[in-house]
Image (cartoon, rainbow over all chains, first blue to last red; front, side, top):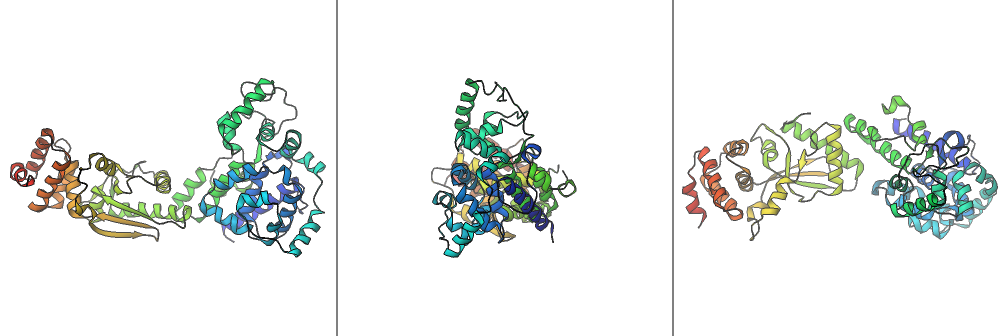
Length: 267
Length: 195
């Protein structure tokens, strides 16, 4: 097995752990957000689609998407998908070309331009798998982003509030907009609101932050890092490979920190 | 950081660029029209050059721009190791009648990988561009013209080209000094170039 396959295998394991946090009963330990950081739901989708194989994920994920469709930020997912290179878009679309994804809601299929219609057999499998998913009540306890979406509505306001639960976030509006894959103006407007009601201070830090989170476990940064890792491992030139790994930033990305042993990345 | 590249190093750097483009943009192909010292070095008409000047594309597409920057960092090359400065100068000074036909002529093409085609500009355009770039105070281009060992008719056409886009007295004075430095008499050409 070459290094890329090892990395992909390890990534699949961590992705399954993150989905356990979201309520899918894979046989791996869950990511504890309090200890390891917040999982961005749409970034988790993107990471999953990048590495997805023909396994239980192919039926369990459509079941999750159908059950939790109202707490998916489709706009963010679309921005993430649109911003990825044609090459990785191709990989994602190829990996999504499984029958069960035809059963997902139109709002989800529209993001990726999926046209497939699921067979009756797939629908029945998804329905069976759906029974195994954790309840929304439970998921709201393990995923802060989902909890805040239930509280404030599915949108960037809820996600921004989730991010502000990180201790010493030290990010300006532009950086937060990049992290959440939205327009600067959207974040600027929400930040103004949150400062006006004394929810945030002038540095965008929470005024009364109880029980903070240590950082982001999986974010849009993770996706950029994953593209970089996949490409780096395709380079034959050691110079290009090293340069690619130098571009990886672990800020807001504990996923890749776990994925890459320091000896591999030379970081 | 190396400042001058010979033919082998130019080709090695272009191979790395081709690899970067292959991995990042696997479905795309790219073509560069090279002019100046790099064209000469690749044709073994001079030993080394500082950068790779392009006439085409006039504006680098994002993929190439990114690739050039990444290869620059990976191989510790100057950021503008491939640039469109020559294309920009030509765009600014382009004669109203357009460029002479021979700017469409090429010397040869070099395939790098399956995705990068390097085209070297034809000899007459190369001489013309060299004469356009030459100044009395900076002898590099004058030396290059000397290395190209142009025939009288080629210089005559190059003078015509330069004067078609810049015929102020100052330029004529510069041309006189440059041509003198390569053992030619400007006045002999000025008459002919007006024809």
